[in-house]
Length: 447
Image (cartoon, rainbow, N blue to C red):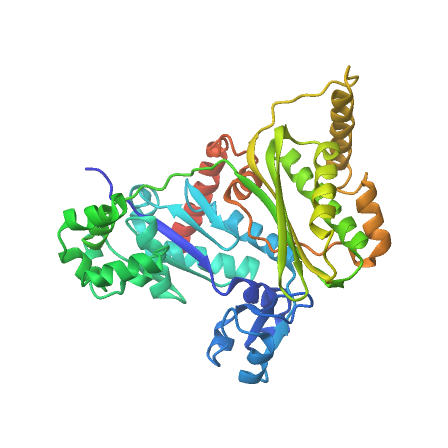
C-alpha cells in the first residue's frame, strides 16, 4: 500500500528578532524588534512574541513601537549574522529528511513521506519533530515552529495555526481541520480571489468544500479545482525540489544621507551596477535589458530602461549605459537623491568563454573582465576594484565595508549554498543517508 504523503513545514519564529536574541543572550525574555531604514530606526521589520503582545507589529514605525512598549529593545539589523544563523539552521534540518526545499531565509519544507517505515517504527512524528526543534534551539539558539500535513500548503497552514510549537494534521482529518478556518489563511491567496469567493458565499474552507467543483473551476480555472480538492482534504502534493531559472537581478539602496551631489550619486550607481554584474558572472548569466530608477527626497521618482542589441555580461558594456541613462534622467533635476534602484532582466545563460588574447576589442575586454572576476573570486570581492568602486570608498568611508543587503535569498542560491550545486541537488544523497542513519540511531536510543 502506497504511503500517504507527509510534508513538514518549518518556520523560524520572528526570525530576525530571534536572531538578535541568539546573538545577545541579555535580550532573552525582553520585547525585541528589529528596525529597518537608513539608521535601523525606520519601520519594524520583525518583532518577537513578547513585543507583539504590546501591539508591536511589522510595518509599524519604530517610534510608535517605542510608545507602545517603552521597555522594549530596538535592534539594528545584522544581515550577515542572520545569513550565518540561517545556514546553520538548514544544516541541521537537512539531517532529518531525504528532501529539503528551502523557500526563504527562515523557512522550508521537508519530505517525511516514508519516515513511518524507516525512522518512526519505534517513535512518533511528534517525538521526531520535537528533537529537530530542540536541536535548532540548542545549537543555533533559534526557536522554530512546524506543521505536518499531506501537502506543502496544508503543512504551512498547520504551522501558522500551531505557532509557537508543532501541529500535525493526521491523514483523514484534513477536511475536519480545515472546515471552520477562513480562506484568507491559505498562503498566497490574493485579495481579489478572497472577495470573489466571498461573493459565492465561501468565506471558510468548509463553504468552499460544499460548492460545486465545476463552478470553482469555471470561475478560477485550475486554481479553483485545486482549492476544491484542498478544502475537501483530497489534495495530495509531493515535495519536489525545483530550481527555477532567475529572470531578474536587482538592487534597491537608500543612501545613508540625501545626496545633492549628482556626481557622487552617479559614483554610487556605477558601483551598484558593478556589483550586480559581478553577481551575473557568478551565476553564469547575461542580461538583455537594464533599468534605472532614481527616487528623490520628496519621494518622487524618475526612471528609464535600455535594451541591448545582444545579451551583455561585461562591466565595459553595461556601466557606460548606466552612466548615460543616469545623466539623461538627471539632466533637468535639482532635488537631492534618496534611493537608487538598478535592475538587470531578461536574463539568459552565459555561454561566452573569452580567450586570453582576443582578436577583437570586445574579446580583449571580455578577457580582462574574466581575469578580474577570477581574481576577485579567488582572493576577495574587492581584490580588484573598478574606478567607481574605489572612488565610492574614497568619498564615503562607510563604503569601505558596505552594509550587507537584506538577506531574502533566492531559492536557487540557497540550494547551491546547501548542496554545492543547483544542477543536481541530490548529488550527495548517500552522504545524507549516512547522516540520517546517525540521527535515527540517536533518536531511537533516546526513546
